[in-house]
Image 1 (cartoon, rainbow, N blue to C red):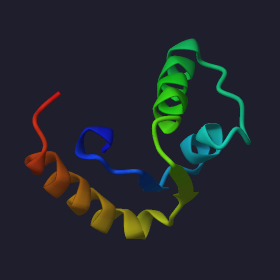
Image 2 (tube, rainbow, N blue to C red; image 1 turned 90 degrees about the vertical axis):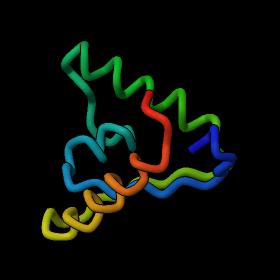
Image 3 (cartoon, rainbow, N blue to C red; image 1 turned 120 degrees about the vertical axis):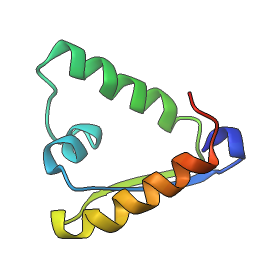
Image 4 (cartoon, rainbow, N blue to C red; image 1 turned 45 degrees about the vertical axis):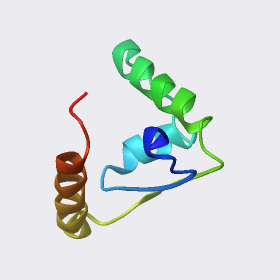
Length: 77
């Protein structure tokens, strides 16, 4: 997103535990997962606005479709 000049990011996730870990509501006890959470936090600083919210798993099918579409537009990392 930052490479494309996007300044405001809204994330919707269907795994409430992960959403709450990113929001600092829950601790991350696993060291490897803590690393990924820290990478997320470091990237959040690059945006003017960032929000993350939990959505019901039934709504995640649409999110998965959007993620696949977006990944086809971006160069592979």
